[in-house]
Image 1 (cartoon, rainbow, N blue to C red):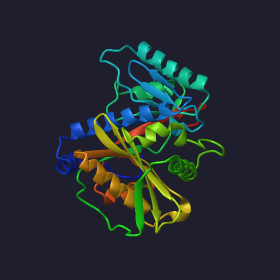
Image 2: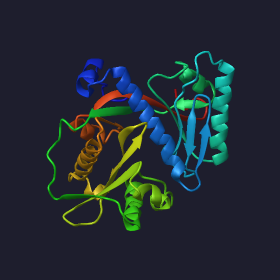
Image 3: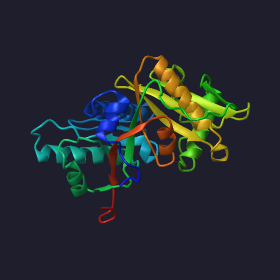
Length: 290
């Protein structure tokens, strides 16, 4: 289980101004929309559309860039149909020859899909992944570093710097995703649906990135990354503050994200509430995982 505690339904409704079920639904649909879009922007990408699951594969040897998302089968769908689709998804990624994850959200159909996944060679890969949401405009803002400069990526050089930052900060395998952003330059420079932000201190080198991406009509925070040697100097805070401000200026009243262990405390400082968790599965050898 994840070490972080989810907000109560009362807190979600009070803080977000919406029924908790609506907040959870919007956050989940947004996340699936963006996470199915992101992998398919890469030149060697492929997509799978099933009855109850979608999948996107970048073709890169990074699990996070090859995802199956959700389990939303129509009521009454028989188990044979679901298991056949599980096998089809596994075959899709096997043909791509890449590592991958299957994210299961807060209200899967069928509710016991995790059991079916385990029966077909998938294992739970802990911890769970918190999904978070915050109201806009931001109601909480921590102290910011006045020396931090944030700007929108607007040239190939920015994208090249962003690829380096992401590769190092996310600890990608050597030689993988060297040109991640510049290979999708049009997507990242046109500003719709994705905006890429860069940050530095006192005119120094570019040291941090973050993205604002619209999906399912909702803005979300993505790809927050800082070079290790520039950590804990307020660059992530500066980027997140700019993202929230720009999303509010666009007329949005809520924003979503998924939070790793390192980012979770930062997001809480900006008023994000932990609304549910994704359970993550991946192909495993027998008896490797639960």
